[in-house]
Length: 114
Length: 109
Image (cartoon, rainbow over all chains, first blue to last red; front, side, top):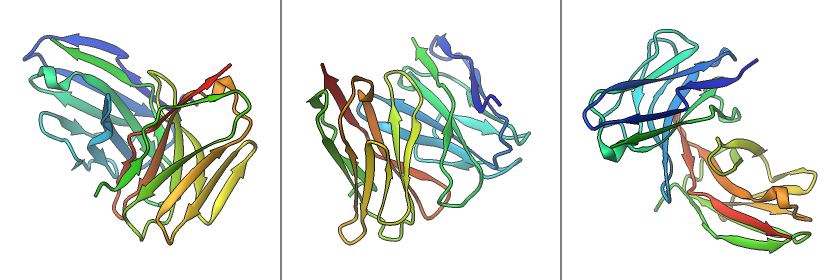
């Protein structure tokens, strides 16, 4: 049981390049989330999904797109990377909407945009 | 007012000390609360959940004060391995979670 996995672990992009971050979970969780974490800012929600085929915007969605074609996968895309998107990206999953269910996090992707 | 606020610290305490962190939240309807631990350059990991007045797990105690809308985390007999950032997390009434910016703890030999 791998839990939540993320690929890649590290990536360096040039401004204007595109990439996709992959998050996978094997816990059959309904909910999945993408966060970014910057120094002094805490975790900020980018997009989330409450089930296969659904997505919704979080606090900082601009410059990102997401897709949830399969229940176990949640993809985060950067169409045209900018230096402001340099950050650590965490994916998380959660069983369902119960407020008593915690989130499980992946190991993170460290992205640098030059 | 932010949804969740924490004292960022840093807290520097000697081994064996007792240390407490507070976290305030704005949504009085919140039903559950979580403390996560995050080591440097690692993902957050669940430390404790708090649903009623409090929860205890070994050296760790979390307490909830609904009237004043804060939760606290008490660590007794601090170990070097307790050095980390502690995140206060409160689920929203929707599908999201609100995270505090974290409290940094360093336990000194």
